[in-house]
Length: 257
Image 1 (spheres, rainbow, N blue to C red):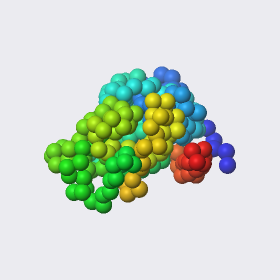
Image 2: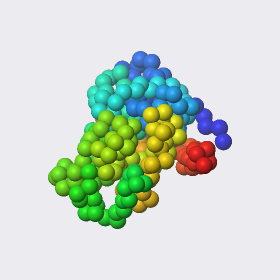
Image 3: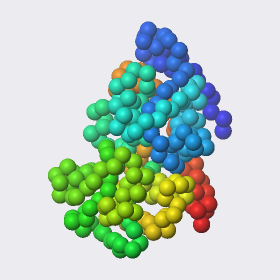
Image 4: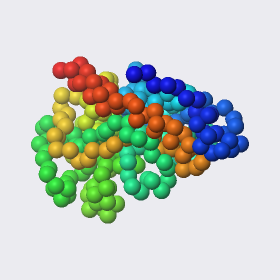
């Protein structure tokens, strides 16, 4: 079914009674993000699975989603504070984040767990099993409320890196025992990251998941951000994001067998 395209300026002006704050051109929705394949990336097809969903929904409300890439900490700051941006993505839903932004509907899901070296057997069932293990994490990534709380309390021994690739290199160099990583990010990196190809068969993903997060755009918590969020969500609700996600990952897994 074809979705009728409604100009976002009309939606914004209707929502706010022709407020002059929306009198200017609102055809571009600029978003901050990071290089995080397969979900989003400047060199990926349609800039990644999640970026593709964002672009499709944005087009339905007459907007062109433009993505700027930077490390995660800078992405979050720019998305929340720079008036040139509408927000940032992909943001995991956390209740505490509702205080800082307006969440879009669900763009997809991230399954987070642990990767380890095959020559160093690893298993866990509860978080207390992770005590005494040196764990590689990515700076400012959310890894589940209970896990993050234990990290803040220094119950768990963690070492922060700027990216998943850096974490995998530390794992291969025996600088950490395990790393926290998204299941499909790991698949993508082992298939495509040149620096990992020589040793990729040494790395294994442990099947017990740490957390499963829904992914969203975190729109700026202001009048314009709320208006765009409402319009965007109307369009997103008409898209079968789960079908797109399942198809993408099935193809990804098939290509790596």
